[in-house]
Amino acid sequence: MAIGFECTPTGLQTLWQLPVGELSEQSLDVTAVANRGVRELTDRLREARSTAQRFALLEQFLLRQLARANWSKHLATDGRIEAAVAAIQHDPAQINLQQLAHYLNTSERTLRRRFAEVVGVSPKYYVRMQRFILARHWLARQPQPNWQDILTLTGHYDQAHLINEFRYFIGTSPGQFTSQPAGMHDFIYQ
Image 1 (cartoon, rainbow, N blue to C red):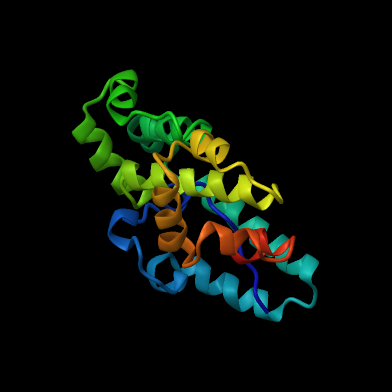
Image 2 (image 1 turned 60 degrees about the vertical axis):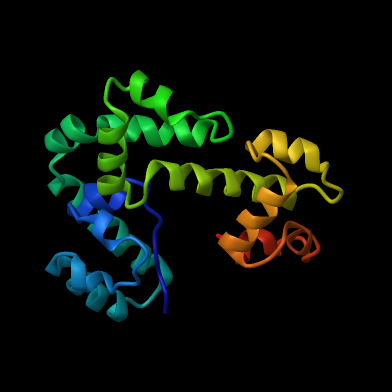
């Protein structure tokens, strides 16, 4: 049995006040880093008789975690990070971190530090990830991609940079990625 949920980039820190900057690029058992409620949840999930019961248990658990979250602290300190994440997701191809820091009324250094603490990766790396995701999205939906359009839409300098990003994130070239059967793109590379 497997069940899961996807957090926003700031979700883990919001729900559990985890030091995600220290946990980046590690595989961890959630029960080792979260509160004891997670252990109780896993026991209850094992005992549940149906998928619907499991989802109901998970939903109840997450709602309780949200109720416990220290929202006043979160909003006071991380509202800028939420705004930075939203800006990067909105248009990763055109984002300029210096201008973003200015817009958020903070220094670039503070933006980099707080972003890494809250999201778990640097804003530059997050931009890189979002550009790759955008490229993957466009390539998965175009049987005959126009490479120049893809480069322009995603903010990559040239095809070599795009190829390097694909190899870095998923271990294959964009050409190999597009040659896979339809429907496999989203399944394999989430």
